[in-house]
Length: 139
Figure 1 (cartoon, rainbow, N blue to C red):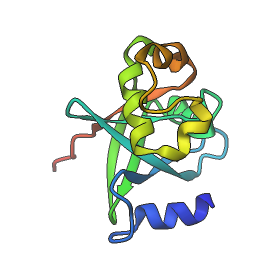
Figure 2: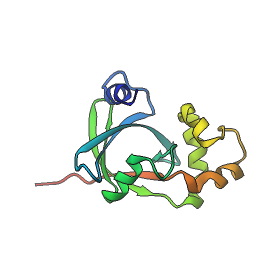
Figure 3: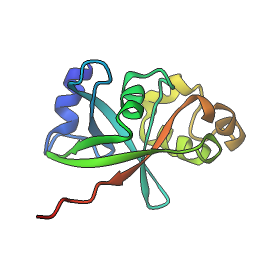
C-alpha cells in the first residue's frame, strides 16, 4: 500500500490536500527512500508526525540526515529541513494531526476530541518535525 500511496500522494492532481511524499536518504543504504506522509498545519507552520513512533525508519533516516529531506506534493518536489519539536510542544500538533490523518488514530490511541492532557501524555512517543523550506541556491 505504501508504494501506491507514494504514487498518489506525489501526483499532481490526485493527491489529497494534506498528503505528500517524504524523500530522505536511507541511513544504511545511502539510497533515497520515499514514504507517504500526512502534513499537518498548526499556527501558520507545517509539521510531520510519526504515528509509528521513534523507531519508524523515516524518523531514523531524517535524524541521520541532519533533517535534510525533500517533500513532493502535487507534482512538485521541494528541498526541506525537518526540525524536531520537543515533546512538551507536541500536544496541540498531535491533535491537529489526528484531525487530518484519521488512519493514525489507532496508532496514537486517541481521537481529535480527546483532552489535551492525553496528547501531552503520548507526545514523547511520537516524534514531530517542523517543516522548513531550504533556501534556494543562487548562482
